[in-house]
Image (tube, rainbow, N blue to C red):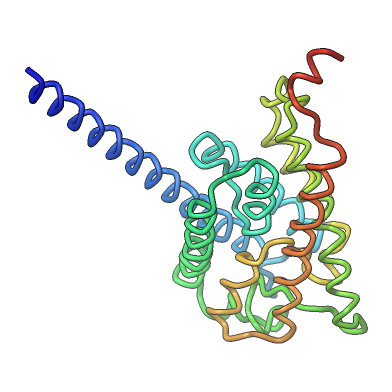
Length: 254
């Protein structure tokens, strides 16, 4: 009897472990596919040639809509971070485990490269590298006349806004407004892209800048798109967590 009970207990534990591993694998796969979708749809919408007319306004609105779609599709699966900076902020703010945060990072980088690779496979070379985008479509580059430190500052500030939105969404005081999260993020991305896109490309996302750089071997000022967003994620999430966030008990008492 004791042996049977022990065997049942061990079987239950193994089953529970398998379920956890399967759940984690689904989450990571969802994050990879979401980031691939972001890059494929977002970068395809930025193609600009003599035949395919485009504008800064169109690109900004397109990326906002794409983020909306990604969150709507995969928000319930992985949270649809789509961005190492958001994952860093989530790790600091909500306590996502470090191993899972690292898996998210790997999934985002692989997904971004996969999504941009699909753009390269789907379009002719003349569309990916045109006279309008000689380095490659969707390359985030510092505009002429903007110093590198100014580009870092711009990326830092707009990412601060993005991470503040993330922290506000994760705030338990906003729990009842969860049904409009995808729309809010989509509009926010469009706004930030319209504001800063002409100066730095408004990346706010190391993975989004990394994939086009890899595929097109374009690394000029690439460090800007890691330092600015990640530093913003670190500082903004710490600020919100320790200054603005309130425990659920305090909310109920108020």
